[in-house]
Length: 366
Image (cartoon, rainbow, N blue to C red; front, side):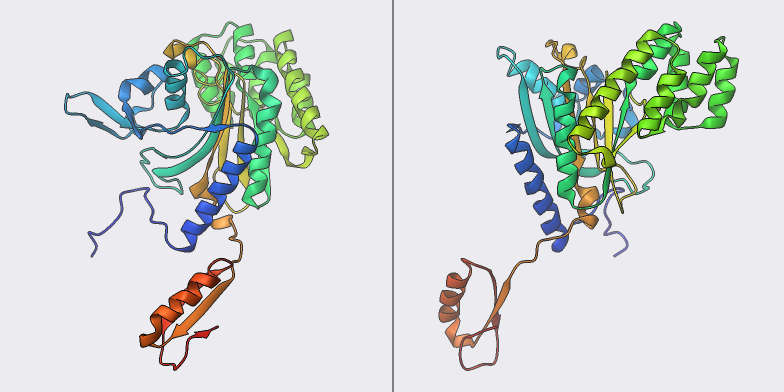
């Protein structure tokens, strides 16, 4: 029996877990549909070079890979954004945007060490293609509505890769130093970050900016701190954009669920603007993630701005509560099953019915 095990990062879902997952999936799909997003499905297998094209620095060890009959390398999809970008650049290449797509599909990543994350999860999300950053507020509003559907206390955390990029560009920093800084800031490795920054030939203001960047978190105070430490006009412009977003989100009534993390700087070659993540009470990882990626589609021959996000439904299962359903039990003697089925068919129009053969003289409803 010890050999009957699941691969690392995989999980069986049974009974009520399936019910909670499907219920949340349908709720999110209804929200997306109400915003005009149309469903799209893609194969779970793609050519490996699709991801090599999409990502400048591909984390190859996280991808499930195998070969087809011609010896070409195939991959299980790691996300839905890249396949949808492929579809948009090919099947929609003669159509005018904007395009609003929604999806519910399993995605796969190799987990080297299993620390709460899974190798197979369902992503339920959207991609808004063909609209520039002026539509960021629409997508953030949609993300918040989706978080509300989960039914637990939540926070939406917003960052902006352009804030970090603008600082590096203003200082004419080389790619190697930029990548090293991004990694240390994103991991909030404060001791290593300070040591690395002190070695760089930067002004005291610039050094202080990078050392303090991981601490630029919270609400309005994070933006105030960012504004105070900004050493160039381009940095102030990025802060003002975030301030505008924050003001708009407050006007929509979302002040209490919004936080900022300006030290959130992953995947600099992929994201081109805001990035955001959703967290719910009782789950140790982000359940929603997204951002703006204006350069991705150009790699497939169609230069269109884009933004999107997805919810990893499997991470939410344990905090989602099922709606109670009325269940009726019908007890029947063995020789009166047809009568019991007739009664069950009538009752199933209003509730769930369970048939139970029992030692009784009549068909009984309980």
